[in-house]
Amino acid sequence: MVNEVLFWIVAVMTVIPSLSLLFAKRPVHIAMSIVTVMVGLAAAYVGLGAPFLGVVQIVVYTGAVMMMFLFVLMLVGVDSTEDLKETIKGQKWIAFAGSIGLAILLIAVIGKVTVQPRNEGPVGDPYPIAIQLFEDYVLVMEVLGFLLITSAVGALVLTHVPRLKPRRAQVDVAKARVLAGADPVNKPMPGVYARHNALDIPALDPEGKPIEHSVSRVLKIRSQTQDGAEFRAQLEDPGHPGNVAESKDGDDK
Amino acid sequence: MNPMNYVILAAILFSIGSAAVLLRRNAIVAFMGVELMLNAANLALVAFSKIYGHLDGQIMAFFVMVVAAAEVVVGLAIIITVFRARQTISLDEPAELKG
Image (tube, each protein chain N blue to C red):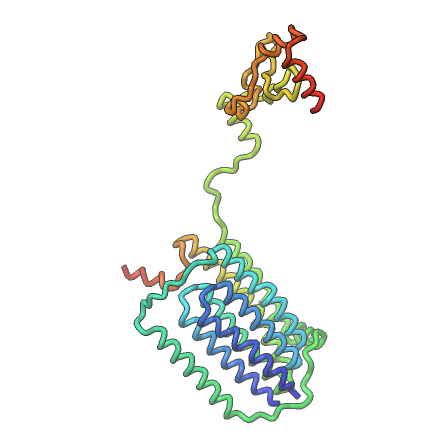
């Protein structure tokens, strides 16, 4: 009635990864092994005639809950090391003894029980589950709805951080820039003597004077700028050797 | 094979979860131990549902899952809030309150 092979596979698949909860160092490894445990439990549910619960187990636990654990690990810092200094003396051994005692007690009590399992139990398909949920347990379903909404709002409230400074919109940024004395409009483009790729030559203002800040600051730092006087001289002297070279250079570009 | 074996498996998983809650200092790992305990209870409920031929056990396991999901949401939010306040999620930190 219950597949024995499936039971042993599930037992190995759940107990061994869950031991990482006790012995593994890094929280991410623990989370991933708990995911394995959840998948094993889903297989057990399907084997026990609860296919709906098996699917819900995978969707809710491996899909949502453990991923949320991973998100919180990411927020908190993956390599948050655990300090192994004991505040309560001998806490480790007391905890081990208590847990093993609990296991022995539970197994002894369960081992004494004799039950006569029914051979034909109902299969927990979605349809009979839905009939039960929305007929016998409809009030519980509604209360669970309240619970879920409350927990969602609670999580929002708990993780909400109030804004310390007022939000800076684009209008505020522009106003602050004008108040600081900056040009409200774009800088004039460089390159009035466009004899080559002339980003290094300042623009001219309406009076014919060069506007120095129209040339990129980077070019000035690298001293790659040229002033207009040199080009004017070249223009007036057609036999200038640099003139020919420059124009060839310009053709290439 | 008797479905009571699944109940024994659930007991073992529950004990491992409780040991994790008692042993680990990292709040998130202890919280995963709580999750494992809830899942062990679920496994026992589903096994009982199989044994007694009722769907009620499965319905209860479903309700436990819903409550566990709500609990995880609030618990992790609390962990994040504690981390923001004290820059650690060690469960030993409240012992510092002794002064």
